Amino acid sequence: MTSTLVARIVLGTLDWLEKNHPGMSSRAIPVGYDTRFMSREFAIMALEIMESRGQRAVIAGRACPSPYLSFATKHLAAPVGLQFTASHNPWNYGGIKLKGAHGGSMLPDDVGEIVQAANAVDEALAMSFGLGRRIAKVQEFNLEKEYAAAVMKAAGWQGDPQQEIVVDYMHGAAAGIYRDILTGIFSVQSELRVDEDPLFDGDKPEPIEGNLNELSQHVTFDGKDSLGIAFDGDGDRLAIIDENGRFLQTHEIFCLLLQHLVRERHTTGIVITSVSFSGLVERVARELQCTVMDVPVGYKNVSQAMLAHNAIIGGEESGGTGFGHFLPERDALLMAVMLIHERRWRGMRVTEMVDELYERFGRPVYIRRDYPLNPDYDREAYRLAIRELGNLDRIGGDPVVSSNDQDGMKLTTGKGWALARISGTEPLLRLYCESDSEASAQAYADAIVKSLEFAELRN
Image (cartoon, rainbow, N blue to C red):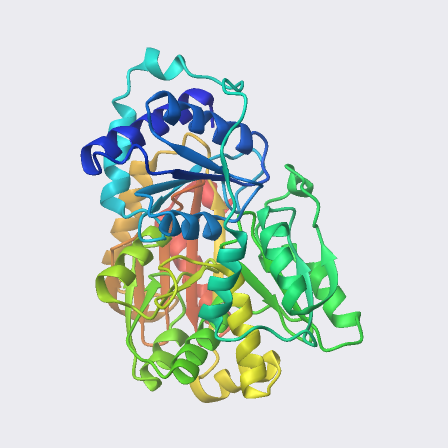
C-alpha cells in the first residue's frame, strides 16, 4: 500500500459517489483502520482527500474491527465506508475494504466501478496527495455503545457473567471494542496478545489451528470449563477452542450457529455458503428445512447473495459468518456471543454438541493446502490449468460425478469433493478437499497437484 494507491482508491470512490449518489457531500463517510503500520495515517489521508473535495468524512476514534465499520456505515446512512486493513494477511500487507450502505461488503458491481474509476485517476493528481496531516483536527465518530447494544439484541441475550472464556486477540483491532464488550458479559479468565503489535509477532493474525497452540493450552490447563475464542486481525473471523482444548473446524462452528438460529429464532430459509465450504452444512441445513446456495469465495459474494435471497445466514470456509436478522456481514463478535448462547440454551458443552453433529450427520474429513507461488507467477497459465481439471473423470481413484467452475474448479465424487483456486489476496494456490477419510482427502489433493503439473507445487 502506497500513498499514491490510497489516493487513487479514495478519488475513485469520490467519482463513484458523485455518479451514483449525487448531493451526498454533507453525509459523513466513516473511515476505520486496524493496528497495522500506517493504517491510521492512511485513514487520515483518506479523510483529508475527501474533505479537499467537499465530501464530509469522519474517522473511528480508535483502531476498530471491520464489522464495526460496516455497522457504522449503515447506522450513519452513509453510501460507502472505508476500512484500512489487510485482515488476516501478513504484517507487510495493506489494503482497503469497501463497505456498502446495507452494512456489509460493498457489492461486486460497485467495487468494479470504483476500481475502474481509480485506475482512470490522473497519475499527477494521485501523486499530489501524500502522508502528513494537513488539517489540525480530524472529526471522529464513536458508535461503540450503539454497536454493543445492536450485537446483544441480535444475539437474543445479555451474556452470562459466570461463563468462563479465554480470548486471543492476535494483536489485532478486536482488542479494543470487542474486549470491552466481552469483559462486560462473560468471565474472562485469560487474555492473549492484547497489545497492539503491527508485526503480529512476526506472523499472520490468522486464527488457524497452528497459530492457537497457546490458547489451546490455556483452555486445557486452566482447571475450569472455559471456551477459547480467537479473532483475526480485523475482527471478522472467529476461531473456537472447545472445553477440551480442541480447535473447531469452521464448518462445525457454522453448523452449530445454523442450528441455533433455526431452533431458537424459529426461522428457516436460504443459507449462503462459499463454494469451498464443507458438505456437512448441506446435510444439517436439509434436516432444518433450509436450502443451501453456494457462491464464489469472498464475502462480497456472500453478502450480495444474502441480500438478493433474503438469506438467514451466510458464511465462508475461512471463518466468517453473517446473519440476515443483523447485517449481511461477517461479525466474529456476534458469532461468539451466539455460539455461547447455544451452549447455555442447550445445556451442553461445545465439545458435546460437535460430537452430536457427527453422530447424526457423519464425520467428513476436510483438509486445505496452501501452495505459495512466486510473486510474478503466470496467473493466466494457472487459470487455464485449473480449468482443465474439469476434464478429469477420476480423482484419487474415485469417479467424478460433477464439476463446478464458478470459482476455480470443484470436482465432486460420490464420497466428497476437491476444489482448486487461486487466492484473491495472496500469491497462493489453495486446495480444499473433503472425503470420508483422511487418506481419501489427501489422495484427492495429490491427484489435483499431479494434474496441474507445475513444478513449484511439488517443491
